[in-house]
Length: 137
Image (cartoon, rainbow, N blue to C red):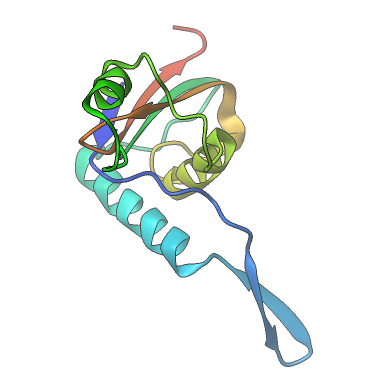
C-alpha cells in the first residue's frame, strides 16, 4: 500500500514539561502537535480500513522545501536528487514524529514495524510518501 501526504515534514522536538500540582506533565511543542493532528486527518481521509498489524515493512520518503537563495545550478541538482539534504532536521526525528502521528490509524502500533527505510529529498512540493508491506508478502 502506498500513501502520499501533501504536508511539510516536521521533526520530533524534545517534549516540553509543565507542573500539574505535585506532578509534571510532558507534551509536544505546538508545531509537532499540529503536524501530528494534520497527518492523522489526512490518513483518515485516505485510509479507511482497519489499522495494519503483523510484521510490517515501512518505507518513508520525506520531501522538504528547497531554500530560495540558491543558484539555478544548485537548485537543479537538488531537484534531480543528485544533492540530498544533509542538514538538520535529522532523518530520525522526521521518522519519530511521523510514526507517532500514524499510530492507531495506519498501523495498530509502530512496534509492529520490523523493517524501516527512510530517505530525505528536496522538492518544490513538500510531502511524505509512505509504502507499507507485510513482511510475509
